[in-house]
Length: 539
Image (cartoon, rainbow, N blue to C red; front, side, top):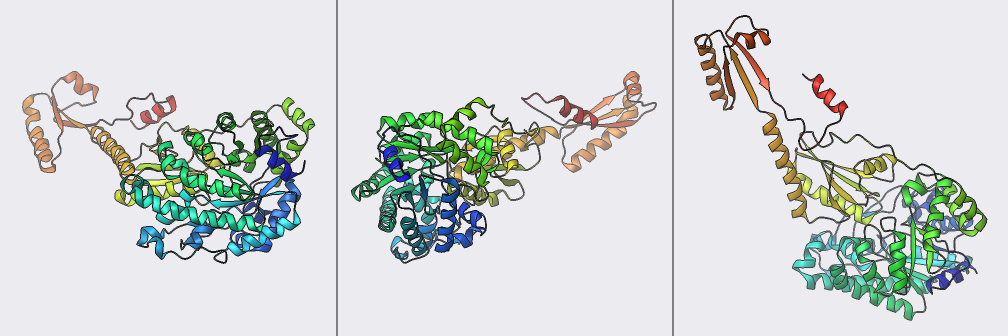
């Protein structure tokens, strides 16, 4: 069977001769042709060349024309921040800046970069008639968040009518974009809605399901196939996603493939995923990629499963790793060989985090895929950036992108399992959910209060006054009390006339004064031997 036929069979839940393979090539196409992401995403000729090169190297059964979830937002007036290595990021939200829906520019096929995308689609359609072309559209909820910003999460509860009005608008935009792509020759329309991972099933049922269901119904009526893409920790929404009646759902490494298989097949929906993007495809070897692909193939089986990465492939992913996946998918002998080989040791070097978070400032760490290319990651970072000024000089925040090995090491060291995640002073605080501003402020303030309490307790001090008699010590005692009073500092002052204790301190004649500082070093945890040694060195 040819690629398009194989995709159709898989989405129809038929047993296939082999598992179809769909590499989500986005700006990686620019890497293959030697241009940066910004240049690539603005040129039909370059996108055509990049996807053509990917088809030549990776022999896919299906492939997206473009992977850019900011395309529609740009047309509607959102400002983009461009990058050399990732798709652009939305940095302005018109509806949060006083504009109304009626003020937004008209969405039409001749606006923004849509003409370049449609030209690329038509060229690829003519060039590769037997390949399944995927046309990606930004899901209504993610587009709504681009237009309104994170205020949408508050409005879900405070202004539901306003959110429904916005979702209706965004559904209309998605429907138009799907129509343009189908007319240009796309076989599969993928509704990519990563921000739905941020809401619970009840909110999904109310604010996403009715609109997504309508889009999939229209795609089906047009005689094309549909897929529902989601990333992040969206396991709680898999069943309601299936209930929207797409032909396929596609997930990333945050969700176990066997769980998705069970839920999807029970709902009569095919499923795809979930090759690990960073640790394996980007930073691993060809052998690592083979073992990863083999594990997915063994889990997914040959009924209703499409092998794909968890999201768009990082730009500088080594082509050899993707070629290794392509060869393995098509060659049963290679699969058997891979099964006999030992897997590489993927253990990451862990950091010693025993004393992490003990500095005077509160450290807020955001573990992301990359806030420049992942919408949920971007908005989680923005949430932290927005509250940081409330704690100027007291709070530091840092992003750790797992597209780099140091980010993977940090994530593993804090035992973070899902992205994006916010940690406060080394403790996991918010997992795959963008916290409302009030909750984030409360969590940070609670840690500040804890640190202040520890600091106050750590500053307990004592003064010991030594002398042969009480009379010898009296004047020095009065001086210390007066100094303490004038400084407003409470001190424990002890008078000691025992000669043995004086000798123990090396004192031969009074009056003498010794200051004693008590510093709390740990509480409710067992420090390591090396840490205790460092404390002792301070004495």
